[in-house]
Image 1 (cartoon, rainbow, N blue to C red):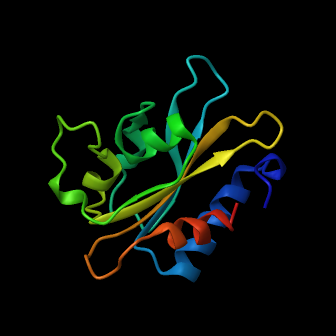
Image 2: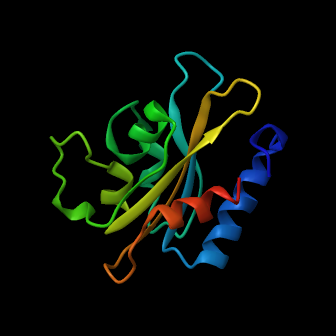
Length: 143
């Protein structure tokens, strides 16, 4: 589905639910940039969450997996999120709050402006699944 066609918030939740069910991730979430200044990016649509902490997380460009994806506009994945500490540039609050061991994130890019509108992130709570470029490509197909 084209991100410009997603005008109803329930469309994003449908995508998250579909990925969660079809791909068997432990957690799937979409963070979108607010239209209101200063344009914070927050997790708005999730499936598989274990708590409500995601609602308080505000992404910062360049910080953490999702922040890196927002800044670069490129997919990113990591199969060992446990070694990041709070002071690390790649510290990922969503991974810590949801106890994710591995995660993949892809940008949600507006076809009209070519700007990143948000991030689609999916992850696992165990080390049994290895993420790769193919996982990022599969995730991108849902957008």
